[in-house]
Length: 249
Image 1 (tube, rainbow, N blue to C red):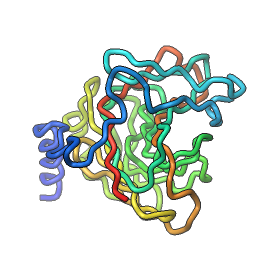
Image 2 (image 1 turned 180 degrees about the horizontal axis):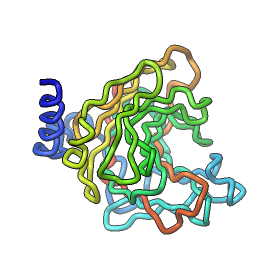
Image 3 (image 1 turned 30 degrees about the vertical axis):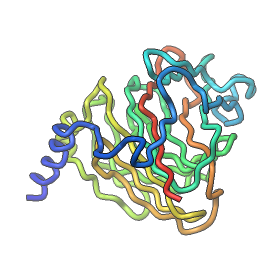
Image 4 (image 1 turned 135 degrees about the vertical axis):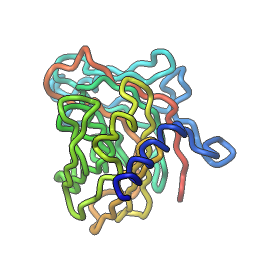
């Protein structure tokens, strides 16, 4: 029964698509990216991912075909694009269609130098999506419940961190649940001051929920997208669209 239930969860998410009922302006959702320009965002080169440029540039971020497209600007040099506005308690949702290879992330309450609670978008071999990581916070927390193999269509269960979180999707169902090379929805919520609870979803299925136990980071910050430094990923791209936020405080 358990295996059948997990499979049904995955298939239901696929069949219902990535839309949420009530996700519009009248329900409090604010568009952060309108598909035409990067108004309300700025690039920060202050993170450690921009060392290759000696922190003079923060990767390449452009608007193409209604999408935010990011990449390294020179080999090894990444960075973040961050909202001008800061947020406290909020839920953020976006759609992604990244190349399988570059390392990215959705930063919650980010500082200009990239310290944040990160909903991981480690879309590469041995990476994962929507695990929770303390970016610039000593790697604490580091929570995940699966890893990619060397193929985007395959995952293996891997419980990492405390408390361990069960994987809600059967590994053998992943290729049906995750639509490779198509748009998929990622969502994260952070609430609760300087000891927040963070929850993440993929295509409507909850992946993680974790509560901080000590005050280690400001209770307000920007929402940021990352291109990781290191290697040469100048010809690989991250792509995001339909970025929206709902303030909860």
